[in-house]
Length: 370
Image (cartoon, rainbow, N blue to C red; front, side, top):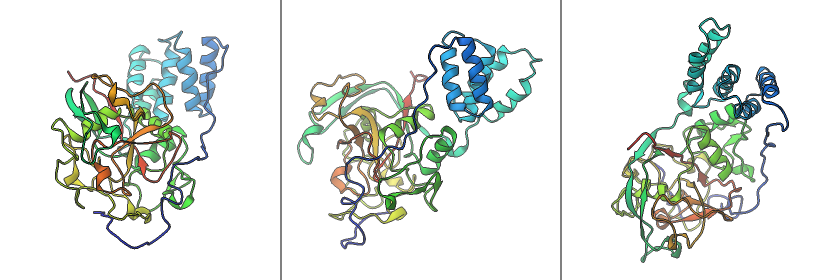
């Protein structure tokens, strides 16, 4: 277990180099858009050529555009299944099954598509362990004591059922996403805080939480696994349940067997030893069984941040302000003291920032649960 209790300076202060909020260089490649002006039939030919050339991401964009006019076209559905399989999309199996039902038994590509069907089981390292958070009310926010002004007023919130990730997203999971989708690898503006070298992982980091990811990176990953980022309200309910507890485990104080946090006034970065593995703090689990919702790394949420949002937020499924300058984060990190680990504590960061103390936890709708 990792508990930061040192009182001496052992390295370069994190708050001075590479971890304070600021401008970063975004390495995103230019986003591909469907070519305007093409007929749906021409778009099918274009998409087929793209797939043959291995341009699965771009091909899928053209396929999606063509299917607006030709939703049941056999070739489009087949190409869509191929692209989704190559990109490790969770919906690939359903697409291929649809094609198998549509295409005749003697179709020349049937054996090929059955081979793709065999590949549609995502690798174990790409899968998410989902925990159900049932529908219902809980008390959100905090007032008095250690509460900050933006944590109030306390208010009742009613949420539909949803799923939350049992663990923070690991480097292994994110690497699968990078290789499958062509998304850029995590990167800090200061190389000494990087846990990757290009798209390769350093030794010993596969089960550590991915860090140095922007809000856009986090949203893209969660979409890729068939989910999304949790709303701020969803995150808080998943962390505290319905009994108004202070921390995910209850109201008992923060201890070294419950969370990865800092006792040091000036926390230091010790490389990979700074972060905790995904299932390290069993005694710190939330009421629904989620690990590390206090400490380790901050977790991006879906909402834009507004310090006064609670004063006028809706009582049913709040999703945050319509716009803003910063995105919300929850949970505290390895560099924060116990006060910041309270489930009601709120924080924020510009959405383009990539920091060594910010990671990802995904959520998704639970439409199959009444």
